[in-house]
Image (cartoon, rainbow, N blue to C red; front, side, top):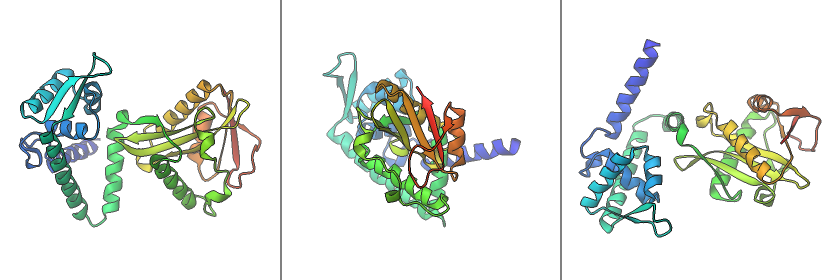
Amino acid sequence: MDDAIKRVRRFNRAVTAAVGALDESFLGRGRPLGSARVINAIGHGRTDVAVLREYLGVETSLMSRLLRGLEDDGLVETVVSTQDARRRVVHLTKAGAAEFRAYERLSNTQAKAMLAGHAKPEELLAAMDLVASVLGRDRVTIEEADPRGDAARYCLDAYYEELSHRFEHGFDVSRSRDPVAAQMVRPRGVFLVARSDDLPVGCVGLKGGGQGVAEIKRLWVAPSARGIGLSKRLMADAERIARELSIKTLRLDTNRALPEAKQLYLKTGWKEIDRFNDDPYADSFFEKRL
């Protein structure tokens, strides 16, 4: 255990030094990391002060000091929301937008240099993804998404690629009972995407079939985000929405090459049933009454 703790602390020191977290002038722009992160978050659309504070994980008093400093520098403007007088919104000024673009260029250059300095950049990225998912587990969000949109497509393409490697004879989506998008949007169903700091890391579809019955389809979690309970969260949200849509019975199927999926279903109240479809890739079938 002592060795493990030393390795964690070494990692913390390495990351702190590599990203310049303690520098008074982060990336040479004349202000510390905290202020730079505020500019970055606003530049990426988080303009509601309460949302901004939650995203950055800072206390109200610190948020106020950071915004006041940026206001004094002429980089941001804070005003009362036109939609809710109890809330404040913050925007970048012209000078602030220029700083945001400068930070983006410098951060991209720094990232490229990190990857270029390693003989196996894909392995380095995989390790980074794993650490980011673990450290950011409390900030992973699950939102309804267009099953035809970019985020859904990203998840589904990764899901199909993984199945093609794990299934004994590969996977061809054209042979499976791939649900059409219209079956996974309200009021028939829904498609959910999990995001870690805007990066899609998981998905699940609720395919409505009418008469109070629906299927769970395309449950997938990125390898880097496994082990933090995300599959259970996705399934729980899908079940919650099924109840909202007055769905009484859920069904799903899975393949023997995905034993962890079968274990999840058995542990969360699903009952194994007889085959209910002709999907050539399915060999286990489950049902759950809501």
